[in-house]
Length: 240
Image (cartoon, rainbow, N blue to C red; front, side):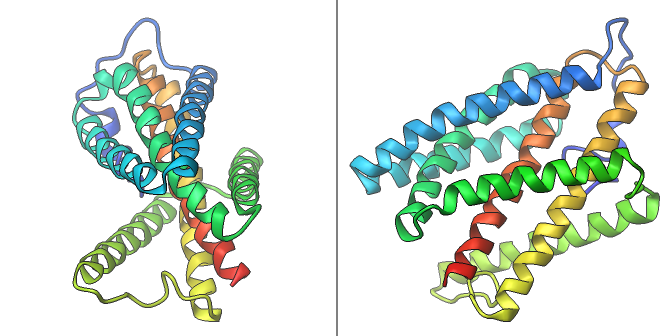
């Protein structure tokens, strides 16, 4: 069980073990490719926002919707990962570019800070996992899953409230409670990364098929994008 919907008990079900199996190194290489693809479309979307903010946000909305569809499809069609993962990276790049440009316009220099914070957290959690400081136990996985679902439900409620002109507390508040909420969510995302690392390692040891490298990289990218967005919100609250 993992907070990331792309992982969990279903990871090892209905998957035939192949001769040429998944490796951790191969998954990392795929993740690097996906990050590069995300960066390419993010730069393009960023530029579109600078030229025409309205058009840039339309690209962002389209990218977010397309990315969501790909996540839903990937949950049931892991064997399509080699095609869906790059598509997701390109779509999310459109979303991230325009959104990042919006934050950068309000708070100069915040994007590079959010990027550094995101990858700093990722490498810190990877170090903690590899050295055994953080051990992925069934209890930890259940706790992270419950916390992740709680955050997802709260964000869904906030989205519905926003449609009626109301604003959910904590998400956008810049006071101590709002900053504390962002820190908690960043912590939950960080522990999702640790669980993702463990699931990828377990899948590689189990000899999963080669396409699972794309699937694992895709799952990591989903968590990293979530972490980056939370980092942007957190830093924006500190600026305010």
